[in-house]
Image 1 (cartoon, one colour):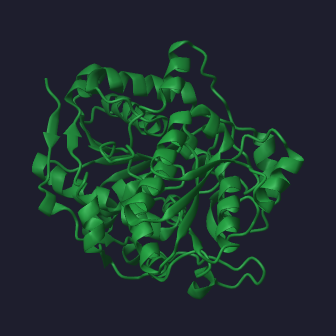
Image 2 (cartoon, helix red, strand yellow):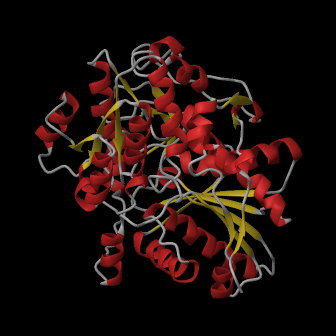
Length: 450
């Protein structure tokens, strides 16, 4: 039995991004000014974001046109294929039909350029010279470095220290595209110095790296900040994934009973799921949605749905989201893109309202799933997406026990070519199952006043 591939013509690439917000059956809580606890006005975001990005962040339009230059760059890899994983189905001995959208064909090997390119484009249009950002596993940092190179911008990346050490070739990839890369926390910012003063051996976190990148941007008039996940405009840009997948599932003559994505900040999950969620809300379709995260950073499954800062230093507006506390530093698992204390406010609200289910998995079980997938489908998954593959395996077992035949779709959001050191440790039996610290989460949540 062979894997079946479904390809769209380049002309079928979406002309607009899909905004789920107007179709939500509930309202979203606005971001708040931490000093006044009043809703943040859009112009308050001007020091770090360009005008078009701010407008997209607060937009109530269902459809936002993609600039033609952005679509032209997208065409380097979009639209990627949708596969039916027949060999995986055979391995799992299941009547279920398993499909995956493969985003690893992009220049940086993940879904992240889908938002990096438009963010760089809009900043260039406002004559910004340099973009600052954070990155965990390095997929976002390498994507923004690529986008800045294409748009003629400089790029500064604060890479979480544990990932900086674990994934040297992601750093080299960013530098190849022209970016300056620093292991965060650094001694270059007040936020970094404050962390190092308390813990000179800090492994870093996305929250810390965000604080450093925002501080850098605010202190330099010719720089802006760029975020790779969490915020509305980022998830908006990623909806090209799901829009294409809707058409490709039609080509396959099927429709998903379950849509699965891994979740750190929410961009990968939102990209594949939001167009299908829109279909469910508008057409009353009976589709389940599952977000998979690590047990070492169980934001959606163990966090609290409250207002909290998006960064460690408390420089961002307060956002209503599931959070483990902005001072929580997750253990150094290899799925660096999932080591974030919070989550997308939209995704958090969807989980809170019961439209999305969340599941958490330990590191070794996800690598086991990733290895099984690689052996039969031929693609080595990034550690982040192995969480989604593990969820798919569990869904297959549950469907078999219930006597159900399911159609399952997940987002294969990136390849693991730069993560082979992690696979080497797993194969040698040296990969620990790192659990979260209940005491550390309680301590961090005690600092949250939301």
